[in-house]
Image (tube, rainbow, N blue to C red):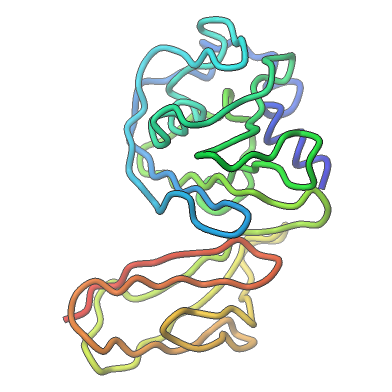
Length: 223
């Protein structure tokens, strides 16, 4: 998946990378950031608000990487605990997040998804919109890993089974995903569905996983 690696770490395609920072800069906004490491969740979905200014990691010149982009969202979400390679023609790369390192020469790398789809630009060129969900995930250099998308009811009743559906966004849109293990439930069928029964009232945290896909999470209110 070398092409995606170049897009994500390099800061989009050449046309976007050479676009002036002012063209992608926008005012601060609130987005959700989740960080999935190679074997565990490093940061559950967390709402953050970007700031004005710019990111200067990796020797990026002031103004070249606006703090209102995905780079700024990552910086706020991690409290500056991420590292980058040297700033170049393609922008900034991500080499380490919250202590988990995947340099450019490793077999894994940091990829970015927006609303569970591959980002169309790199971290310095990705203009954010209010309410978007950003996912930074460590993915293998060979092959393709898509995020699992877990769909659940917002509210359920104690003791009553409810349906959970797992999908992913491939090149041709959303597709059901079989074989996904849902914690507290079962394994999804060919339609991507399984059932879960909540035993107690409160907030039920669901997690879903399948080899070759990026973990997912969802919270259901149980009454």
